[in-house]
Image 1 (cartoon, rainbow, N blue to C red):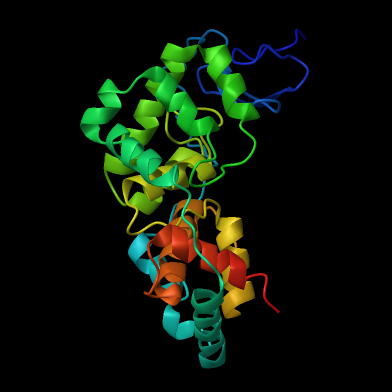
Image 2 (image 1 turned 180 degrees about the horizontal axis):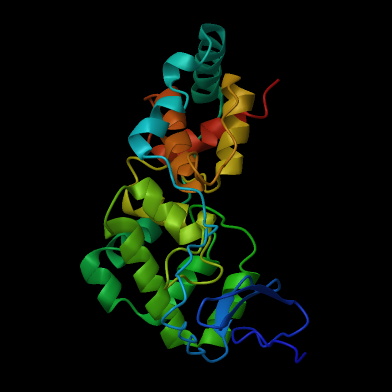
Length: 283
């Protein structure tokens, strides 16, 4: 059997066959760049003889997602945090505000202001392509981790196609139909057709923090927020599952919970995030 070559990164040794589609084409995924693609030519299905009875088949599909209104009731709220833990958090906040000097990074405010316009409906159509790439690679305001996967996809797709995909992803995240939490999940689980490889949870969350700085902390992964909730407030947040507690829902709800627990008295949510990270290190 001939080796399958990934059309994105042109690797062939890490490509795995996922399934055969009903029309005869094959679906594969590249383990190296995490790109899924379909290849082969469709084969016209043979018509069954007129006298042959039709039979039904059971299709295996992804589990149905439980409605968000139902699942939201299962996620912890401020009232679920033990009183002693909340009091400890308040004492840590008082200590932080009294003893830890907060010196905002002078680069953050202009960077956030610029990209708030960039991610607006008007700005996204007018922004220079280089500015989209700079947002992904820059750590100003929030580090999003190793950009290698994104940079590789940018080169292999070409800057025009990569920029088009980033615009599509951003419009879907900020202005698409349905609930924000479920739009984010769709962008992360491969459901969105125009996804951009490497534009992951961290970059999506940073986009939200820029677009809505009064709601979203610059803490860009659910894993980090889950760890902070446990360390500072002694509450264990749930693990991700595909049917109900999806990654988009948990990413948004954990953010809202931490903002509510941290409370007021901070200059902005960058200041609040600095407190939460500091508090997570206190014994």
